[in-house]
Amino acid sequence: AQRVTQPEKLLSVFKGAPVELKCNYSYSGSPELFWYVQYSRQRLQLLLRHISRESIKGFTADLNKGETSFHLKKPFAQEEDSAMYYCALETSGSRLTFGEGTQLTVNP
Amino acid sequence: GAGVSQTPSNKVTEKGKYVELRCDPISGHTALYWYRQSLGQGPEFLIYFQGTGAADDSGLPNDRFFAVRPEGSVSTLKIQRTERGDSAVYLCASSAGTGGQETQYFGPGTRLLVL
Image (spheres, rainbow over the protein chains, first blue to last red):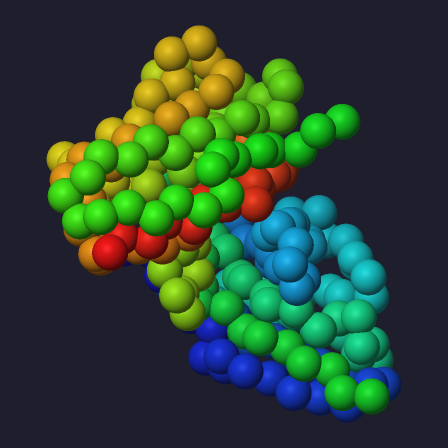
């Protein structure tokens, strides 16, 4: 069965510091992976997807099939990056399996 | 344009009652999804529709849960004989199609509390 693990429920960094949110997955098929973000009092929204290999708001994520990981990284965190981040795996029929989420706090 | 909307935003009910939660997807989106998010957890898949038909309902926890999308647009999630464990935020999402290139756009959710 598919599974997404985000080992850190809480992550706190200072503004300007690098940040890495970890995501590991378990899936027997070819994975499609996403990062979703939920800012305070806003709805869940897509941040980036691995298939696009894009950088959004300075964030990047590389799919490592050998380590079954899709960690989210940003070299210089900003206060406005404070939010809840969810890693998600798309399986059959486009259903998404989410991790439990990591609450990122960027301190001034 | 308008995003995905959900009504009501909050619903308080008593154990054993029946509730209906409504989702209005983005106009033209053929795929519609329901997820449930319990406190401290990520969203959990319930069911998804492609057009009017339920393409995958394997996430529905039991037969008290049922969802319809009769005209391929608005969807209603129905919960019979509610239990306290049903308390959660119910999220709806829609997408223009299916597959890794399609983005699921989420609604604000309905917060259900069963007393």
